[in-house]
Amino acid sequence: MVVSKTVSKGHSVTSAAKNASVDPNSIRQYFEALTPMLAQLTEDSSKECKKTVAQLTDSLRHLQDTMNRQSAEIERLRGALEGELQMADHSRALEEAQALTHLGSWEWDIATGKISWSDELYRIYGMNPQEREISFEEFLGLIHPDDRKNVEDIIADSFKTGRPFEFEHRVILPAGDECILKGMGKTVYDSHGAPVRMLGTSQDITQAKQLDRAKDEFISLVSHQLRTPLTIVRIHGNILEDGLAGPLDPQQESHIRTMTSASIRLIELVDDILRISRISLNRIRINAAPTNPNVLIQTCIDEAMPMAKKKDTTLTFEADDGIGMVPIDTTIFGEILRNLVSNAVRYTKPANGKVAVQFKKEKDGFLLEVRDNGIGIPKADRSYIFERFYRANNATVVDGEGSGLGLYIVKLFTEAAGGKIWLESTVGKGTTFYVSFPFDGMKSRHADDAVE
Ligand code: ADP
Image 1 (cartoon, rainbow, N blue to C red):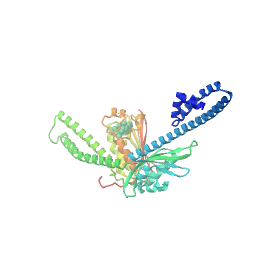
Image 2 (image 1 turned 90 degrees about the horizontal axis):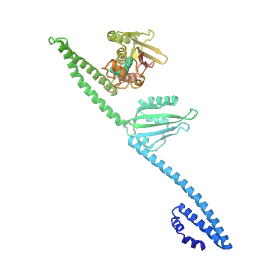
Image 3 (image 1 turned 90 degrees about the vertical axis):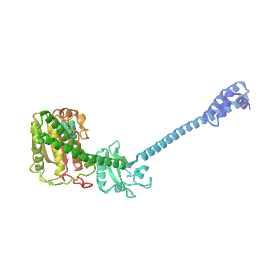
Image 4 (image 1 turned 135 degrees about the vertical axis):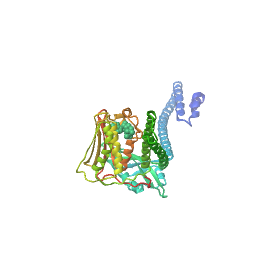
């Protein structure tokens, strides 16, 4: 009674009590306000009353401890709940992002063999999200039969070497349509270097590919249209230059020469663009047939000799007499070699230039080497040198007229024929380009249509 009377008098206690039902902290405040009042009562009251108050104080302290423990537990639970809500928000946002970009993700637990797919990945493959677990074999079975081996080889290689992987492949969807996917992934290792997981993404790039194709078609068409008028300009320029349409004074002759050489450069550029669009549109047929590489290479060297002589550069070919016949597409191989040799001659110094060509059998295939003692390629430029239109600064000083398309085409041709290309270079000392093919030689391939 005494307590309730005292409590009802204390304003702070009353306001704390009001909130007690909603907030454990308010209850704590209520007890904290009560404690000094009980202490006051103990001092003022009789022995009997003091005893009761002491018991009451003990009970209150006990109650207060319980409350403290409970509010700590509530705080802990609230933190955990917030964390879970955040996670749920993140995974919802991730799912939305995946659906928006048509990009699915997957994870392969190597120890259990379990493969988990994100919902979007199921949708990309034309299935219902999480409709069933997909095994590695089943995944391979979903890939277009012509692309399956390549995907399998790339994944196996990444598993062995630890290198991240990237590939494109087709999928025949349950409804019979075909889509193109771009896969990327990597292997995760434990602290002892053992592979534990593989994870990656797969994106539907069908639309982007269709747009690319439309762009290549357009470029191909425009280039075709440009080639004829440009050739007419060149032919008529030559007629004028040769005096077949009457004598020219020196100034007129100089103008005509500038005009014809510009038209020749334009024709070369258009031809390069046509080559690129034809290979992108899969309109280049590769027909590898048993060929004597020595004869083919010597023919290309003979063609390049006048250019080398003009620059006072020695051009040599060291033939390997025991090489035998090698499956080669002579046109494609000729394009690759001519490009590398003409670059080697162009980028050697004006005198004492040396360009040496070799074709030999190595332990894992055939290797073509084009070595020069020219200006070299600066380290910073090397990783971009096979990209279209890329030219290193030191090359633009030596020759202002290159297009930066030659090496891009060489790489496209080499890779389309199953080969690899790389280089070694030292600035001021020279460069060596290497092109390798397996012992099977160049890989034949059909063109999508007969346009060549
Ligand atoms: P282009 O020679 O018309 O510029 P390429 O695609 O054939 O185009 O070559 C791209 C660039 O690679 C060149 O501009 C040059 O910077 C570099 N390059 C190619 N071959 C050599 C070489 N043998 N020596 C030095 N630089 C080279």
